[in-house]
Image 1 (cartoon, rainbow, N blue to C red):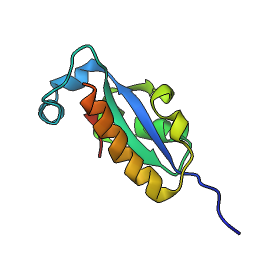
Image 2 (spheres, rainbow, N blue to C red):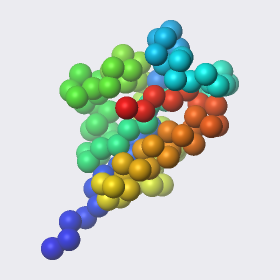
Image 3 (cartoon, one colour):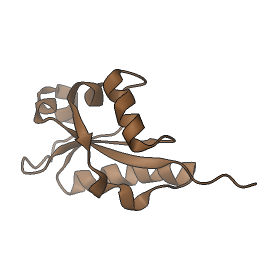
Length: 108
């Protein structure tokens, strides 16, 4: 029996304080200060559950654990759910697209 697609991409709004991190600034030389800073990830979990795990320090991305404020489903919900390979590729494509629009982006 075929397994249903259950992987998701997600985008987390990061506090502007993340801009104090030299690594973040270095990865976003063309950041537009009128745009938010975000983290783009992929998961086999529901994005809400994955965000909660980041904030609890469970397999957390440092910038999400420290600076994550909330999910931005308007930037990703249309893509979900999808197969693993599609989610892995979409994570990269979405990060690139947001960075090209001037967002400050972290993607692990």
